[in-house]
Image (cartoon, rainbow, N blue to C red):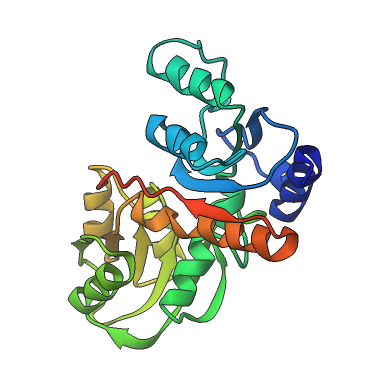
Length: 250
């Protein structure tokens, strides 16, 4: 498939231009003109770039790209990553907030589906362009039970700040590092917020606000979207794909 045709299609279905994002979303490095195989990963790092080239892919789609809205010098570890992609004639495409927010292939929509949320709705961040999902659990769960459910679904440890109602009935989900949305969760009357990781001061916000926070891992909450997108590319265009799993434990 022609690279430019595929990139245009990706930009369209992900609504790439609609998001104000620190990430430079879209095609970050231009490589081969023809795409025969794609690789997907959560992060554009040395391991995934090398893995994509070794797998014979012409396109690497990632959630966390190489460039974040500023001029970055091509030296050190960053330079080695860029040079490896160029040597491998590898296209590198990034979708950060657009893939978090996508209603069917987004990280948050997929986690909401795994939890079987009832009355799921867009939630979190800019009201005009929400990134996450909020809804009700199919049955109320104690904080420890919800943590166990998340660990089973995502395959990793979950840190819990159980300061909200017990049992938990309503949750907001926003992947990555979105503990800052604890205030919005309280304002919207949610019992808990599920995200990837948080910051120190969010402990006190949750404790004093009477809401639970679940930190399920930045990486663990952001592996599903790229895989769902890759499967959609295969379904629509017949391109095979491989997922390059490179967990950080964070």
